[in-house]
Image (cartoon, rainbow, N blue to C red; front, side):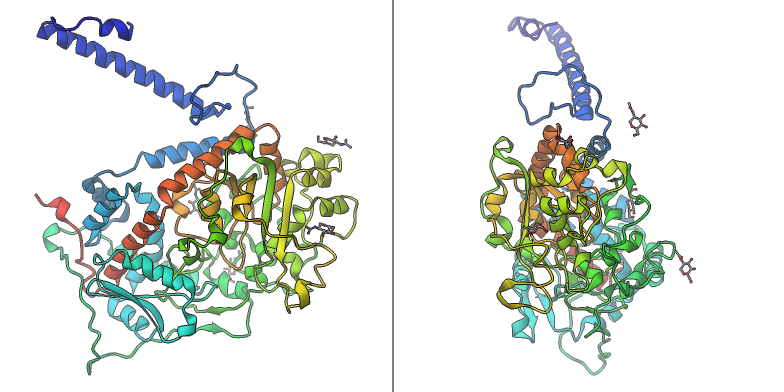
Length: 619
Ligand SMILES: *[C@@H]1O[C@H](CO)[C@@H](O)[C@H](O)[C@H]1NC(C)=O
Ligand SMILES: *[C@@H]1O[C@H](CO)[C@@H](O)[C@H](O)[C@H]1NC(C)=O
Ligand SMILES: *[C@@H]1O[C@H](CO)[C@@H](O)[C@H](O)[C@H]1NC(C)=O
Ligand SMILES: *[C@@H]1O[C@H](CO)[C@@H](O)[C@H](O)[C@H]1NC(C)=O
Ligand SMILES: *[C@@H]1O[C@H](CO)[C@@H](O)[C@H](O)[C@H]1NC(C)=O
């Protein structure tokens, strides 16, 4: 039945004939759709160089099926991503009902306005994208609101919201870091839709709160027991206003005890957040770093044939005690000020074991050219160099003469230096920061015949623009690094986009350039131990390529994409760019924080057990 024939006769048909024809058209259309979907599915399932960014394509004869682990991880990730997309809510009723289903509570008052704003800015609302909010807020349900309010009463740096207006309060003018301004501006954009609240900010670089696992477990269990969906007639819609005038019955503030000063052994404080059965829990900070560092002897539980399968788990230090000797955060952080008691404080990033309430990092709210490349997002994939570029400072903590080889950025620079790799292959002591991969899965072809260094030189351009050694030395020199590496000129972000591969590695904490990288037309490779607001909306192997925090898999990953799988690299680069422009826009950060603040205001409210949005349940 050709489409032409179906539409060939017009005008003089009886109603019955029209109905008959219509049935035919519908049936034919359905069949075509099913056929098309099946074809599409086959295509997506194989990624055989044919993908949706190409308008015309010639189906190639089925070659040997690609059975590489990287390929299969990407296939599985695509399926997972499509399942997530299928959960998108497009009406208020859907959004509210998915909320109840996933959270076990009614949405907070103000949900309706929030959803309208989300629709207006064409945001993709998938309930799962907001999981982080609930992970962060839940423990506070275990503490009485009055007590929570006493905890923040005497704090010094906060954003205050009263009567639909927001402003920043601080008694230290010099502490007004630029990102505090960015956060305040973001909250101001939500006015007048937020209830009264005080939002304590972490104005330091480092992450702060580390509640022991056992205690956190109790909080979370208590929250779960309280969850329920009550009858709509019991709901109240108005948050309680704050009483700022002091009265005679005021209870004193509850002070948080901060641990810090000269101490920098963050690992010993961190590990109390690890579940007892994890390998990180019972091991203390290293007294002496291995040179080279001590790598794990077993493949990690979150890998499949060596490659990262569960990116969330791969950022979890509790599962990887070797990271206490391979990440600056644990070797020696720049500063430390931490507490082991739960305390509501907002911050731009955190380790998986930290209990801060996450908001988008100030740096990514900034349009600052250094971190964004301005308006340029790079040219077409085909015009890019088949190579990797990295420029940055040797941050990550205080590296010194007797520990620098444990720091992640220094390790990365050494591993991406072909000369260094060649010297290591020849058996010298040129590379104290790493070892060559021993497992078969990680060995590039070039390594097998001793030409890994040569191969690395052929595609890698990675160097520091500043050493930041401790203590600081004259003229940018660093006596203990000088024999191993040299400074290079910086490369503007927009020129970095001329390279296909953009690796991203933690500095003192999260990396400020990730969002800009994601929005570029290049491929982002990412390793991190830090959590950020957007983690639930980006899918590894679909939107970026994850790699291990030891970097042991990096050669194998690069070899895979450089040798014959350029189309797969291109696909991830493009999908990452497209998707980040849909779900990582400034509007999306605003919507995330807006929703978070509704939850925060509710959990801090004396009437929190009845505060609810239920209009969708009334007739
Ligand atoms: C693909 O590889 C996996 C594991 O590496 C193996 O179990 C499977 O049989 C392979 N499949 C094919 C079709 O070769
Ligand atoms: C850590 O120590 C505790 C108490 O001493 C013990 O119960 C637990 O099994 C240990 N965990 C590991 C992973 O060794
Ligand atoms: C990935 O790891 C996280 C954290 O360890 C865990 O909660 C989650 O269930 C894992 N996801 C999958 C799909 O196994
Ligand atoms: C080593 O292997 C690489 C990659 O397969 C190849 O290009 C190179 O010619 C080989 N070198 C030697 C010395 O065999
Ligand atoms: C690469 O390694 C060599 C040998 O260790 C060193 O001399 C050189 O400065 C390094 N290059 C960079 C960019 O760090």
